Length: 362
Ligand SMILES: [Zn+2]
Image (tube, rainbow, N blue to C red; front, side):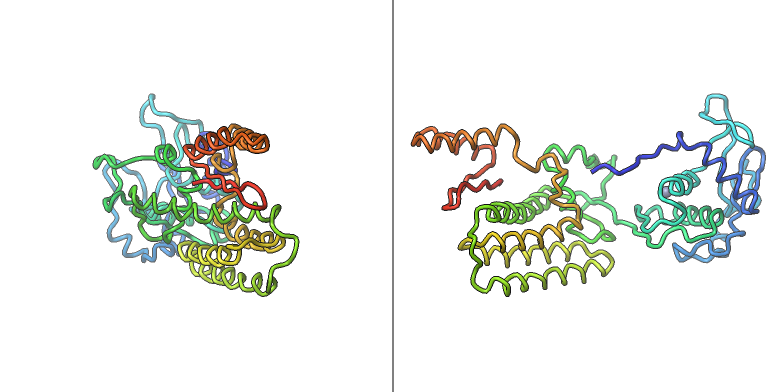
């Protein structure tokens, strides 16, 4: 899914300059030969995110030859242009470009406000990048920068670190050729976000199968909700009430540092119980209630939202299903079977039930 905003640094230069100027005005930054540096020592809480002591950091830091900063811990907010060919913008400190960290603080403030609820990022960005974002934003805005920090683990491929040199490097776009975006999301959520995630074709296939188990349950319930019985099932209220323990379990594990792996396990348990309940058919009202409970949980994970282009039947598939229904009405069994085989080859199974035709995607 697309994010609401995909901001570009080059479109936020005036805001970045304003941010840097505020830090200078408040005494957190200084100009030197067209560069602007952040005075790290002026922010006593520096190191709080990565759990490092500012004096320990100081002892390991050095000022490189040619650098004009006052303290080795200081970092650049603005860098003066060194050569004519470098990309640069006009600023109160001359032609230059933003430092590596200021752009995040500025764009976060503009698009999300002074305090963010959740800030994500790879583990390798905790220090110095995120530490510097905090120093900049909290000094400028005077309020906490983020309530929660979530640092995700690396992706391994067949047990090895993903890297260009190992030639095991690929993008989401590459995987999308074989798997839908929804299946990839399901795969990523099936591990805890802080742990490294291992990518392999076998694991991807396993994820796809797990995903389809839920998809099939949803399709069955969608079908039963219009084609099921009008009469209530035996012990229907008890059956529905029994489903809520999986919802409680889901909330409990998700409250524990967003444990999506166990959250998915809770959805599987919910699906298993529902499958048992509906194996001999179900009432419309039960199907409706069961569906509501699955959807409530999958919505939290952004799954089965219908935003993925592979969800929903294509027009051509629907046309074939309609044609097969017509053939059956005319008792043209040969044509009906032919279409059924054609659909099977496309991964669509048709199940004729007393309530009508149910479509199952494999
Ligand atoms: Zn950032």
